[in-house]
Picture 1: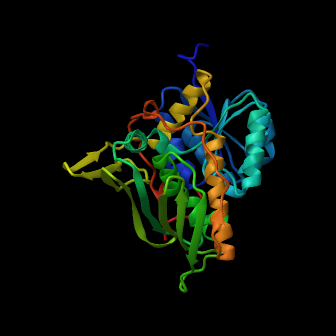
Picture 2: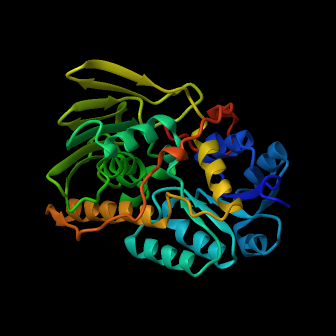
Length: 371
């Protein structure tokens, strides 16, 4: 089949909230991708979701068999972070393309193993940075690097929510907590706005006395970048919902909110303030999961390497690991200089319309994330 006619067949690995709420409905908005299978250890999910989407369910014990079956071309891995590595390496070893939820893994060592596996494979790997295909975010990234806001000085952000301890995110230690889960968003934004990698990391964490998390539920992080740039962000699992960031340059300041979340009614927006006045840049809601899937499938069909590849995932991982060390020791962590070989480009932005999301009640066998 020609690349214009073929659709990439995906198996969802892990049928949790993000897969049910966003990826599985979103893939139906694409023109080059289709849902073909679900891998889950929950027989109720296997039965009900397979019937809902007309797909074949597989158990984790049969995962290797699925990869060799000829029934799929790619997997979307959305298991808890600690389980990413084996699912990804096994798929890449079988020549199956991988769209991997962030954070990439739960250690730098495992992230490097994934990169090594991808380089040895004929298959492609993309880390699911959905905002790298969202028009408003892509515009901010590319304008910042072009110099529209002048010399960039500082970035600050708050990203918080009230998470239920009963959810898997609430009791799996640091790598299941707010820094890898939510902190990846402001971290990735700062890195892509500055077009560089941090060289210094310091973090302070607190634990609310009335909550039962087994990690710091609120964490404040300070980063130093080359060129005298600084970034700060605070994330929390024990607070009311908030999401925003501010970027300060010598010509302009931009304040973005909403800026990290997704939803059928949520459009990324930022306000630009300069000597010329104030201008609001508002973007229509898009299906961020459909966008990233359409983009990745296009890369597969046309044999192009995706931008948000394993290197991008590793650059975030090294900072997330440094935050963990700083929280454990109370010390500032110095990172060796690093550079990405690619950056987000304007042609990555897509505008697929939002799919209808199922309600929490309509999702199968999940512990709702929100308290």
